[in-house]
Length: 184
Image (tube, rainbow, N blue to C red; front, side):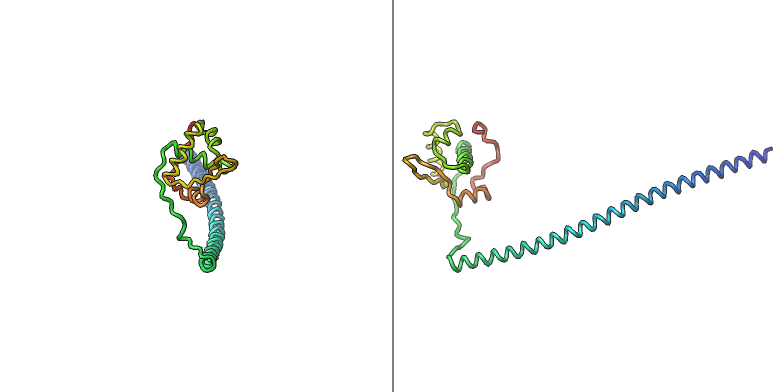
């Protein structure tokens, strides 16, 4: 009897070990499957990176060709038309007050829509035309290239186009992107 109990215990232990071995094999099989999936994903990402690198190389080559063409155009303009990129106008502008900055931004924005007058600036800012005229005069004195042309006796204001382009690109006036407060 003791021998039978001992044999049953050994068989039970063998079965438990066999079950544990099967569980380990299943776990390793799952891990192997996950590793294979991970390897496939890595290979796909590598292919995508190589493709992107190829496209970036092509884009870089095209940009270099474009830069060469622009250099050729500049040389042509210098030779034929006397154009000198280095002779772009320099603007020496003293700092604007906060109110002048606000009025400048309104002028800049309104000019995109059409003709700007003291009246349209006054309407947009809520200030009187006389106060607007004083601020515009102050900005001109500080070096802001504001052009004034008269149509039917009414002054129309505009920014010099070169200055406007450079202001958009270089922020010559060092304006912040803060909201216009009461002018919104």
